[in-house]
Length: 315
Image 1: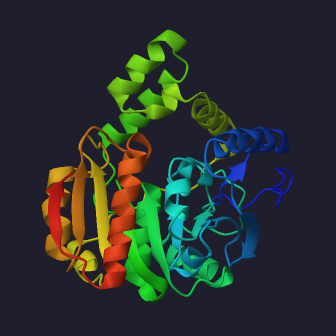
Image 2: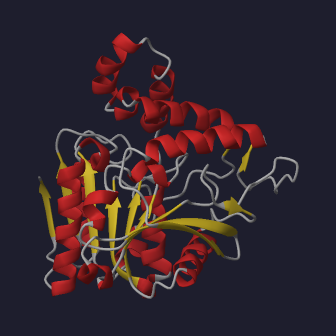
């Protein structure tokens, strides 16, 4: 659904700066989507806060289409295109839905803010209901991890499990993360010959994937995010989560302190599994997609067999 710049939303609702920049961003999104599995279909569903755009990826095996689906929630400043390294593997074994989060530059059209925890949980619950999903394995990356944590805390009824990929919501977002974000953005303007070295130094694969680099650069120009950084959940709030939970962090994460959370999360959340993936920072599902996909699917299978175990380890 197009979002015209002529109809300005409230001050705390994200927006595209113009129709022309919106169209440029969607073209960049489509180039990234083309790197992954094609969606079986797309659908807009209505919630109290936004028209939410969803993509579905169906397994080739008809028997797998009846399994509990996976729902993907992307990170801040992005859209569902970020899941291109994951959709093929995940949808080989289960139906997969990817949601464009309202307030970020995707094809959802936000009408009201959802940065408050209760509103965020209501939005996602309404979106799942509108898609006909009574049960789902929820996967969230970065800001999407905060949304997944909030869902497990406040509206867990539809959740079979929650997987958090280097998520927000566990610690206050620190200066080191914002420095990394701005350094990565400036690095997109570096000469082509320097980008592989900068990508390695910054743990930033966007620099060496031309389609991702274009998406990031256009997104910064095209869209205005209007929400504060999310606050972390307290120990007491985490301890109240009963949904089976899997935390996968990059060893060199700048959003969380991996060793600290490796001990903390399984201690607070009964049955939670926490793991650190070496050789990556904030994007384990991009840097090591095949490995991350297998770990996520194995966790979901364990949940459905009723044998998820509490653990904290490096993998």
